[in-house]
Image (cartoon, rainbow, N blue to C red; front, side, top):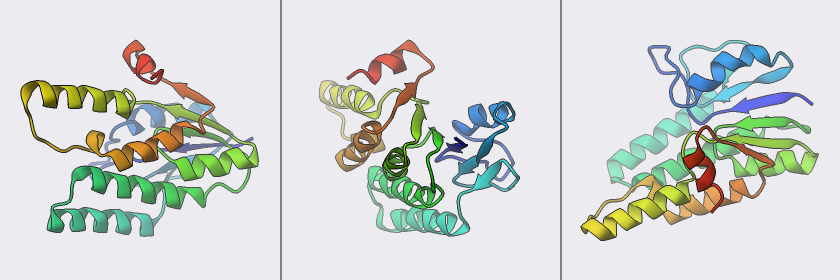
Length: 182
């Protein structure tokens, strides 16, 4: 089976990997039999690191602009950006694959699972519901009022659907590991 790596993040205009791409890009050389690493955005494009789609970048930017104009809840913006990344990535899966992802991609993971593929999630943060529980507790404790991607319930449901089709979840810390046991 071929390997596909996927990340919602990318490489910025200064050619610096952001988020989990910092972790994945250096290890690609140890996976010579892979189909590539699909990231959201990049100023460079090479054989192993591929921008998902120019149209995806356009849509992502439009979501950002619309969000600024209408002052949308960041959770809404993030949900639509993650949803669109998942939508476009799902077209890259054409047969059973080892799908190694740092992004929440339920549609793509389900398609891969139906082909008989293996889904592996590398978690960069504790589970978003765990973070949500902490934020809600702090909001109540200190009488705070704020909105965040971690408090937007529709986004959390989107993420739950992703975790349901994962074969393995790899974490980097014991706190992150424990958060996924909820």
